[in-house]
Length: 344
Image 1 (cartoon, rainbow, N blue to C red):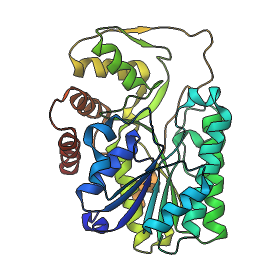
Image 2 (image 1 turned 60 degrees about the horizontal axis):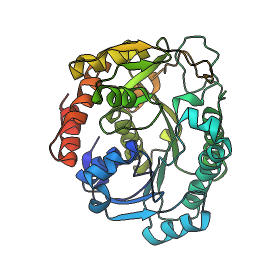
Image 3 (image 1 turned 90 degrees about the horizontal axis):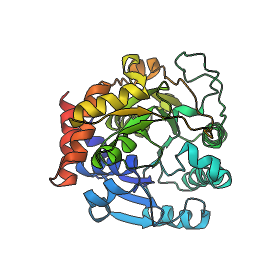
């Protein structure tokens, strides 16, 4: 990627206070982008945002709700972005069982609102809409999903993201919008403290000298460091800003199959990097449905962007644990890991 592609470019990031949004904001800020962030006033996983003081560094730190179309329109009108990265979402599977209406509102109607604002704002040249690897109809056939697999979803979160993909495709075709959707695997990285995610659960347990309880030890996921898909998003954005409309499509970003390991194995890697700890298995008799195996085929991204993962799962875990244990400036620590990845 030409790092100058985003220099002085007006970038709008929705969900910039979340885990992935804050990492993306730090990266883009470091290469000179003029960033406007738009997120809810309070976010329960804003640790990277808070510790790196991203809100103080970027051009504009706007607070609001993507479900409020008029408020969103005013932000677009005020800042006139050139490219939009849409990451704002209800992103937790188990939460979607508790709050299905909120999940569908945010992930479907909220996404539609963002797309509509992009359509009505002439300055917008490109949009990268972040969905998920869970948007596919998973029949537990244990084969990697390609971008042309049928969409679907058992749980409300997965179903809402599949719906969002249909909305994105409709806007792309109906209004000739320069849109790409990105379906990333399970991301890990320093500063993620979301509930019901394995790495944050491991860190919370290890910090208290407690055993790590893994409830679905045999579930296989495509674990990757957060930097990996973010680079894919940035590559897509660069191509779309260049007017290469063939990149306005759906894209998978996930690790090589060797890094698609079980939850138990990931926990053991975390313990190895931490230096102590123990894994125990437990069974939740009220457990809600989650896919047993989920992997992605990234042939398309490797062939056409080109993009490929650089850190395997062991390295991704080591870097993540190092971030959590770090005591230096969090912004500098974040950028240092990005530079380490760039040199890989």
